[in-house]
Structures are given as structure tokens and as C-alpha cells.
Image (cartoon, rainbow, N blue to C red):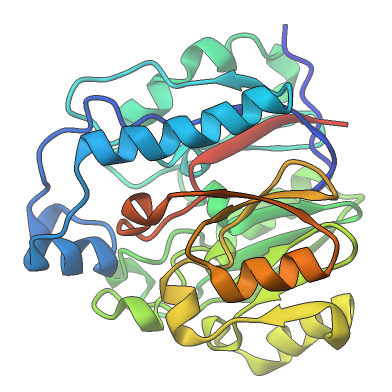
Length: 304
């Protein structure tokens, strides 16, 4: 059995699910895409190749091995994009919650069944159908749970709106002892620079009391200000619209001191090193073309 434990985003990692780019399938049709950035690259003829993405994910797997982290991979489904392991489930404390993912992506959930079955039955939760949620929007942070959401009337038309108010309510009920804080995110089906697909596309808490944030990702300025005040302005690294587009906030913490980051994030990586972090730099720009990066491709199961 796997004894899950996730209290926050930065405690020392012991076990993680890392997605896979194997048998990723052909380049999708524009009408089948889930985000504006993928569409952009399909139209430009720069959509990433399976070979390049496998190479990038292998680089991350090697870093996990070096830090003695147990890595689980989804079972490979032929011609299926299984890169973004964070979308399909998430862990809070000792409980695994299966996400109600976009239609057509249920297969991805089945690919981690072998992990799900190793979790005690009373620690596995499938939310009611009305609750839409993806792991990129959910961040356990000690006494808090931060959740990205969208509650506009046009929610059904926005394929980029992934977590609804019903899911926020359900998580509040599941964790009555936690403070659940939700944030309205800016959404766009057509403009990747105006679209915070998930909370981790515009915000990420780091070790040492630091955080990365992009103001325009938040629809309500007060909510953005709450986060800045929570961490303290001097501890927050503000990223630009272009840096959000490159997915600069979507790094991944192995511990309070060690962060995996994309090798081209020069400004961010320099700042992280100045703050005393060990930065493990990897090539991940091809993965980034699908509007997801390091946090999106990993689902932590056990941290200290």
C-alpha cells in the first residue's frame, strides 16, 4: 500500500507520478485542442515531437533518481497524450482525489489505476460529477488550500475554465479544518497570453517563504493582493505576461531548497539562486508548447 502524505508544495519529496510522452499520438486537430497555446503551435507548424518530449521528461526522471525520489509513470496508452499527470488526480494530506477531467480524457485516469488501487479505500475520493476540478488548480499549503477557479456565466463556453465553484465547495467540506481560499483566474480560449489555464500558470509557492506570481492571471485585484501580502512583497518574484506565457511560474520543488526549472528561465533562475535555492535546470520548452510545464507533468504522492 502507498501511504500518501502531501501537506504543501515544498516539503522533501519521496514519491511522485511523472507523466509520459510515449505513444503521444499524431498532432491533434485544432478543434480537438484544450488550450490556445497548443493551437498556436499547430498552426505555426512548431508543435512538439514525441521524441523531443520524451527526452525532456527523461531529464526530469533522472533528477528525481538523483534525489532518491520514487517515480511512478502512467501505463502507456497508444496514441494518447499522457504528459500532464497533475490534471488527473491530486493528493491533500493522506487522501487522493480523482479529478473530474475534461471529457475525452478519462483514459488518462485509467492509466494510473494501478497506483489508485494501492491507496487504502477510505483514502480515495471521486468527487460528484457536478464538481469540475484539475490538479493544476489545487495547492495544499499547510493550513490552507489554494484553489484556482472561474465562476463567470460563460464557464460552459470556456474550455480553459477547468475548476468550478461546486468543486471548491466540495473540497471545503472534505477538509473542514483547512482554510480554503479560491482565486478567480483570467481565461481565454484564443489568447494564450491572457489565459491562466490553472492556478499554477500564474502562481507557485516556493520554499524559504518565497513565491512566483503574475498579476494579470488574477481577475480580481484584491485576491492577487491577498497572496502578495500573505507571502510579503519582498518574497514574491513578479513575472511578466511573456514570462507567464513561457510558463515561468510552473516550476517544481523537490524540497525547501531544491527547485527544478526550465533552463531558459534566465531571470527567474538567477533570482532563485540569489535566494539560496539549488536550481536543477532542464530543457522543457517543447513540453511548454502545450501550456503546461514542470508542475503540470508531476503529481506528488509523498512528501515528508
